[in-house]
Image (tube, rainbow, N blue to C red):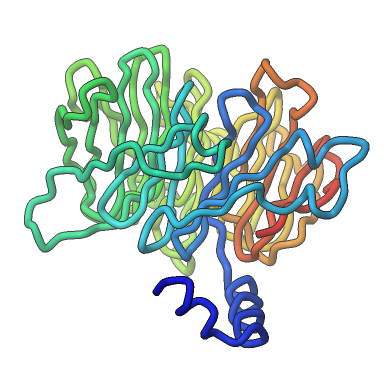
Length: 341
């Protein structure tokens, strides 16, 4: 019956539908495989595509090498966030997180291993999960999103340990301060909150929008991206992209970027950021803009640095957002090519 139904759709009509899907596609999330040779990308239709980085980077690469090896339906709604453990790909959508075995995905057997739903306050609540964060030393997965809480799940047992409450609006992003160990969360309420994982309590709050040098009321107070490096944090969104000294809660560098930023990361002695506009921005810690490297998407939502030691030949930066393409930068100076759904 299913095969007959598929044959009933005229070929030309299906091609038009697929073209429209690609035209309106947004890629929210990316994750590199444990071996470093494959990249997963999740879109607004709930699909995950697996690309072979090693094939696309090969000297014998063809156009077909830049297409997905496999694409599968992972969630009913958008795939907002993904992370990889040494064996699993974890993906988050509306109200749930799912696990897939990388070994099975690469054999094109895309059956979910398990799914979990955090203990929400009512059974009618299905908030989106905007961010996933692995805490390897504790074997924890932290989930956060539309219910304004951080949920900690034990990856061994699949049980939820505790929930952290403090944000008064959506949580957009998470970052790990490994030495402490502390988790940082940024949200629509304009606050970055630091949580001690040992005590499961909030230990510091930085209300970024209240600092005059960072505030941009016309853009709002929301924090859309953050990253940490020891005693330093960089965050942005409605407020300007800013480097902070965490111990003193002091903004030290305000980066001269008008467009709201959606993703930021520390890389060697640089800060990389992306957001509204098609460029990946490279910043000196002093605030100087070192370079802007254009990509193919009109706006960027995620950056992924493949630094897996097992695959040095696949060491690339990938950027994705408001299109069906994932841009691949083999060095930080230019876009080498694009992968495409």
